[in-house]
Length: 248
Image (cartoon, rainbow, N blue to C red; front, side, top):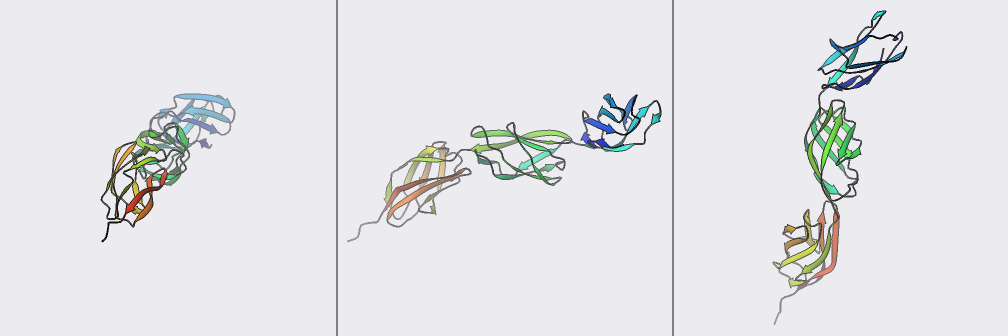
């Protein structure tokens, strides 16, 4: 007498299909010592029942006018607990793979990012990997994991738009570096790095449209300025000119 699914939430409410023979006239289905909250006779070979609350492993039995069946195991699964996301932000287009850490994750069937659902890969009871779906708009969304034991949320993932650079001012400075530069554009509040001709520059985020940057030393000439965030990079070609000091 197989049952499907053979596991469900400790809170109950799992619809279980029981198949076998001589099931007509079923009067009761029990999960351990507890009666199912609802029983439906589908056919002489099939009954459906809604599990009551419970814990651990219990035997499911069916009672008809002819007697009671032998028990078949049903496993109660607790709701998952998520402790952290391996990566908490990424491109608006999605497509990047992240890890989810926690407990009770071995029966995970879906992960929702702000209502958009993805199918995870179970690594272990404490870890999932999932490919992030595309987001509707830049910004934070809730992450919900659903398992046989129920759903749990509480973590946040931030969709990030690709940065753009509108201006670099001033546009020139000495080869020794140390020039304070303001970069304006869009999606700059999640900036990971700023480079001048490939050399990293110290920076601070003012807001989503402004960065404050100090130029590193560089060779005389015009160079590209590149701003990078988790969604990608923006290149301002020939945006800054290093000026050599005078010599006499």
